[in-house]
Length: 184
Image (cartoon, rainbow, N blue to C red; front, side, top):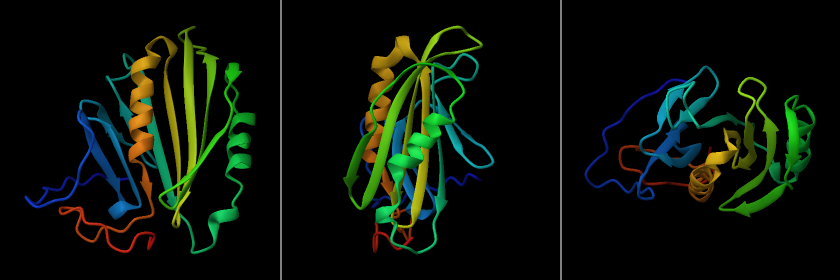
């Protein structure tokens, strides 16, 4: 992925929660809020957001997304896909949460969490995993953090979840107006 900073027009319609910034990829294919003081690193196939520079970070939110071919994705087995991710996880899992599903704003989302013992740091950690489809866009979020800082990290997760939008089309990102949702 590559980064491009844009200067917003004075009449833009972008709004984020207090203390957060908006991340938008591919003219609205993916949009969510993240803490304004977090560090953003673009990687080859994903974007990673951390509260501090690694290795001193206490939380890392990573997202990737794919454009899907035009199709009816309403029957795609998201729970089964997430279960496969969990089954393939080779970390020392302490516990697994239940899979939660939500349908909203033209999106289908599933997510869960696992607690594990970090092999390097020998510390209790939590990983939240979300798979979503909206329009013709599929996303994968992973959010890893030290369990002792969970209260703050849950706020970050919930803000991301509340603000998440998939499959929108924004003709002028400097203005922020959405036209014809789900055209992506």
